[in-house]
Length: 134
Image: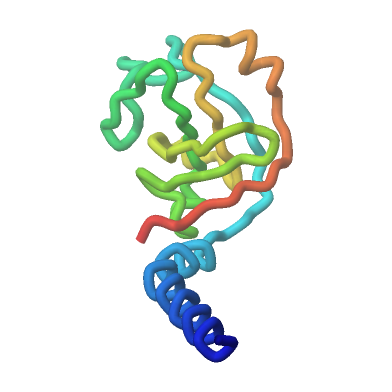
């Protein structure tokens, strides 16, 4: 009985590993970085002529969790579509915008049209966790 239980357990673990390899492999690919985090809005003066279209021609929609990244972070895999978790904020954000080349080591959290909220956010040093886009 004990040998059969051990065999069943071994088979179960092998099956889990076979189907869970991609989950574990992707978790191992996650990177962390400390970045400056600011906020921006879809309002004139903070964007170009169409404040609802981001740098890679993605249309931003209310309720989306979006960030812009400084261009130097793109070499780390933080490009269009990358999924990012941000220390202190719930949920997962998607990289859909890029910042002016004068900024470095920075993300910009999109706060739709709420300028007051973005100003209250200010500038922080935060840890981000992401899976690079290749």
